[in-house]
Image (cartoon, rainbow, N blue to C red; front, side):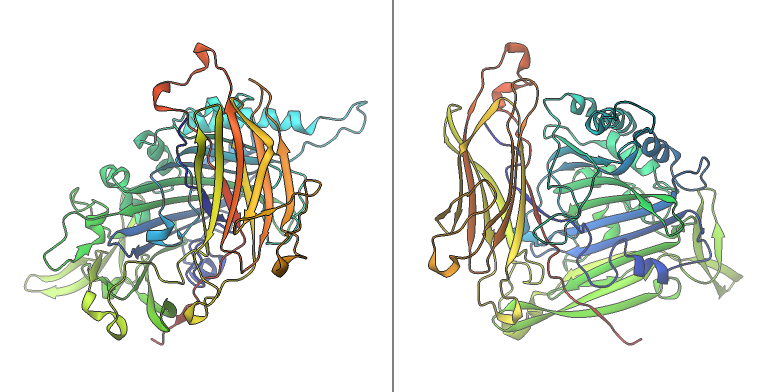
Length: 579
């Protein structure tokens, strides 16, 4: 048996860029970026983040956020289909992701927005139905949640051209207890009476049929603004890592009305094979839009905010390379210092361009606005277009303090803990599964990046035919076995942490053959002096009938991914530079 997507993903429940300013989707930035195109009822904001990676690749994040009243029947910008789905399923929160490739935390550092597992993943929570006052029997909340889940998978599967109908079978769906809840790092989860469901398809292929309906949710689709940067499907699906995420959430406003918030995020790890002799590459070349003759010269007219953020540190440089960018795309700059080890700090630059532009603008047929500049030539007054583009270069000679150039990420971007899952044992009868969490920062790291106490939540579903022996569950801290007391708490035998309660929570739901999968959930407290945590369990594979084998069974079975959740990490604090 082979486990696909064996590297467990470490995510932050905040699910936001860890930058202190210019965060993707930040409400503070949105408030400052209000334009005359803002609508008091419906809002649409678009942003992009570009960051060179230590190994020469570049990560590109496109982030879109829309909101509208949930009770509305007609919308100007908001996709009506999403509102209909939310109302029909009594949706509280849901997230659907399609991913190919794996994010490498050790080579690329912490992801700007939490990583996703390979294939398709869907989780959702639902508002409980109101209980009738005159009925003799109460409405079963779990039954209503199952019905809402079936409707949600049918609607989203049809809309995004994905085989989510397989997630309606009871042997593939689980009800998380701790995972996918808002968590502030305390020993207990934030209280919620909303039932949750989760399902994943590790073997689901990601293709253009998933991206096209995703782009249709945008007011200007891929014809203007940040969406126009995704014109080249070849560049998108030729990336080393592709993650397409759609999240819906209902929020109660101050006037006791419900708003529906739609957040779309696309993350790409790109590499340009057509670099110039001096090593310079352009954003248009990375995204492949230069080969299509597409230029970024407009913003979506429906956008209240339209910005591009470029983040870089030595030896990487990012600069504007478009025509007339200085005149029409105002730039702001922030800086921060981050340790790189050996007592040396690196200067990080965060540059922000406003795609809304200034000056004279003309409106096109696609709902876009094009910035132009009036210039005087031999033939009189003519209009010169403004084109947005960025140039990336690498100067290895500018390494700080004469240090050799390192391809490791800065300490400010290095995740403090990383997780990995692998199989042990032999064969399918005496198999084993281990989730290992390793601390990347030592106890005495230069630059003030010392390790700290933290917490961890593990969510690991397993299909019913993988029979887990829960009595073999072992948790070790640096090789020392942690005893599980009553399934909830534990005390280590180590003298340095003899009074610490390491296991703060444990939930185990056994599988039933051909009816439901098993689910293991744990919440652990990890002291700062612990370097490695291992969670191991043994299993055997059940006997399957011929018609129960998946397609191409000779290559092995795909196991659902393990989800590791941490409290919000320490970020890098940026400060604005004087104009």
